[in-house]
Amino acid sequence: MTRPLKIGITCYPTLGGSGVVATELGKLLAEKGHEIHFITHSVPFRLGQFHKNIFYHEVEVNDYYVFRYPPYDLSLASKMAQVAKMQQLDLLHVHYAVPHAICAFLAKQMAGDGLRTVTTLHGTDITVLAQDETLKDLIRLAINSSDAVTAVSNDLISETRELLDIVKPIDLTYNFVDKRIYYPRSCASLRNDYAGPEEKILMHISNFRPVKRVSDVVDIFAKVAEHVPSQLLLVGEGPDLPKVQHKIRSMGLEHRVHFLGKQDDVAHVISIADLMLLPSEKESFGLVALEAMACGVPTIGSQAGGIPELVTHGETGYLSPIGDTDDMAENAIRLLQNERLYEQFRDACLKRARTQFCNDLITAEYERIYYRVLGIE
Ligand code: GMT
Image (cartoon, rainbow, N blue to C red; front, side, top):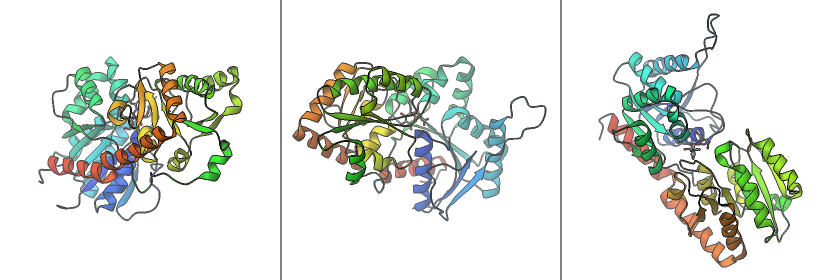
């Protein structure tokens, strides 16, 4: 390694794919000898145990009496600059454009040009927020002033270019999973809690936002359950949960559907599934499909966004047009009813996750980008 770096990382520290990726990346970089400073409003939920190279700096919002809305973004920018100066950071790596990349832009003005900034785009920061005319110019400014910009799929790179007229290079850095955590776990007793020996388990994990089309998950399951004895496990919470619960009751499926709420130990939970369902409307990558793949679980999903870059149709899962729940159900039934085909898919999943999306590979890509922006080759 050239020289260890001092890196500030800002992300959404609560549940969500971008926060998971940022936190896991920080931990891996710390293991490789870099000094990592998380600058966030609360401790990232996946941070885990003490590590001598990991520091946490809490952003406290100034709630002065004239403020109708306490300015979190300004407090974050100040904290970034303060930590950068105090710790002599080489760079800030921010995950999610709004407001983090904009705050990094401000922090750089305060800390001085020596501080480099790297922005990772994760999806809805572009596919949803950059559609908003009130945010568009801000996001464009943040992207154009970052020393490097990365995105988690080619699809997201194209959307960013199209929506914001960005011409500067954007590096592709796929999401990754830590192969020491995500592998098929033996959890027969957990599986027995939810399904009989002859039954299959279908699973969906998300934040239950409208883009996830959780209602499609229920439709797919209902069709599959007519042909294959099965149970559905729903993991996570969010705005569409009540609607989904109502739909399940109205379809008389409540005895076959289990709500697990938010879960931390995703690798264990996924290992009891036979199939992951991801019929999203928008999905720049689909981290959960990768987590499933690494545990040997194929995905039945939509062709949205970056999912086809992750799930190889006909090898590690099946993808259908968005909303085509008949096709998704047929694909699920085909895979669940053919043991040999299922084993082939399972092997392909394990191989693809380990070779294309493993932690060593992607961490090294981020390091290359850091050294490049710092002019250290
Ligand atoms: O899936 C979400 O809605 C959460 C969101 C986030 O910001 O955490 O996920 C986005 O980033 C993940 C990590 O890069 C990607 O795997 C998800 O595909 C992406 N979500 C969307 O594009 C909807």
